[in-house]
Image (cartoon, rainbow, N blue to C red):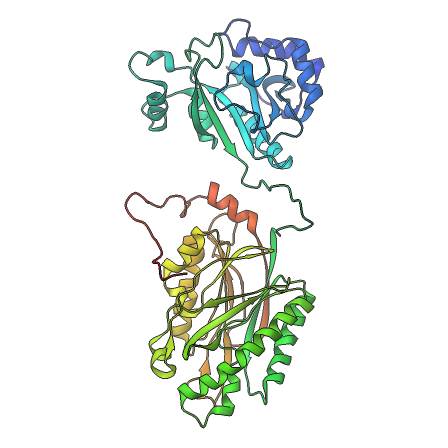
Amino acid sequence: MKKEISNIELSYLNIKDYSELKEVMISSYHALDNAYWAMDKIEKLIDIFPEGQVVIKVNNEIAGCALSIIVSTLELDDYHTYSDITSNYTFDTHTNDGDVIYGIDVFVKPEFRGLRLGRRLYDYRKELCERFNLKGILFGGRIPNYHKYSKEISPRQYIEKVKDKEIHDPVLNFQMSNDFHPIRILKNYLKGDVESEEYAVLLRWDNIFYEKPQTKAETIKKIVRLGVIQWQMRPYNNLKELLQQAEYFIDALSGYKSDFALFPEFFNAPLMAEYNHLSEPEAIRELAKHTEEITQAMSELAIGYNINIITGSMPELVNNSLYNVGYLCKRDGSIERFEKLHVTPDERKVWALQGGTNLKTFDTDCGKIGVLICYDAEFPELSRLLADDGMEMLFVPFLTDTQNGYSRVRNCAQARAIENECYVVIAGSVGNLPKVHNMDIQYAQSMVFTPCDFQFPTNGIKAEATPNTEMILIADVDLDLLRELRNHGSVMNMADRRKDIYKLMRNNKCK
């Protein structure tokens, strides 16, 4: 019968605890001979890696312990024994320059089993791994029930049956339930382990927050500040006035230290008023003549205000064909181009717009991003291809005239955030342009969407603008939450896809 518990405490192992620790080791490993560490071994572990040696105490009595070292995977033989990894129990394999924690031992006193104390010890190791910015945790896990099945099945078959819940193994089941994944079988791993017939399973836990040490004076940001411009359509006398208004918003977002400024689709449409005497196809082709100058001006603003600018979209003539394109003007001075792939029936009929073929992610100082223009967000295949390329944030500049048109973009954009476990940012225009054909009215409510899980808002909406009102929207998003979601979410859409029954691929035409 378990004692009444008044206190549970996790603390570093102290050599003064050795006598009590030895008793706990002996009782924990009753099936193994001489199953305890000598005092000098424990003393050395504490000396070379004090943070790696912890005990958990219940009512001030040692109930469990975890021992570990740091090793380099470059020096680690894929097929090793316990003696190898500990350098014949001297722990000379430990190095502060290593990249993984190697678990030497975890044990819980029999009378305290069932309290999930082992989980606390493993959780501590994971936190330690993250704190030290190591790639992950490795250890050789015993399979103590294997001796019952060794005459009928191989160790590999045994592991598969444990995975499939056909066989219960108290050690392996526990480790896999704590996100440790089997890598390979280790033969002759622990001498004298009769229950496992000296087999072990090399298990690994990956630190999803690991960052490769930088050799340059630059970092990829983890908390990203998004700036969204809900643009008012109003008359402008010339391009200079339009750029002045654009700079006003960029200046404001830069003042709040935003990392991105997102403009809507065809935000420069007011300049078509000058060509209203022409047909719609002729007028938009005149507008296209401003695209290069606007892009260059936006690039200069990106540098001057230290902000990445997504220019929304603008018409552009290429070999006498009209496309709907936009530019990512980075604050480092580089410029990248994106295209609208799906044009609406109205765009094709009225303006003779062509669909592009360029679909790709963009590397920024805030991670990988994708851009889909308006209607493209309604085709889930596009964002999935971008997500497969590592996209973490999807930007959707749009232009919708009616509320039902807006709802299509809005609802599809939110679905993309859930499906692809990413952030999605949409920006639209409001107001009206009575002197521009085919651009009479606009409806928009700009938003920032998140996946739907415990780390995020319950409704999947990080921020939302006031509908049909000119304003800027600013929101911070945490990229590390996406990594956590993709590896430990309540559901994992990206990981759980049934690639055995369907797949998504690009055609050669898609760049």
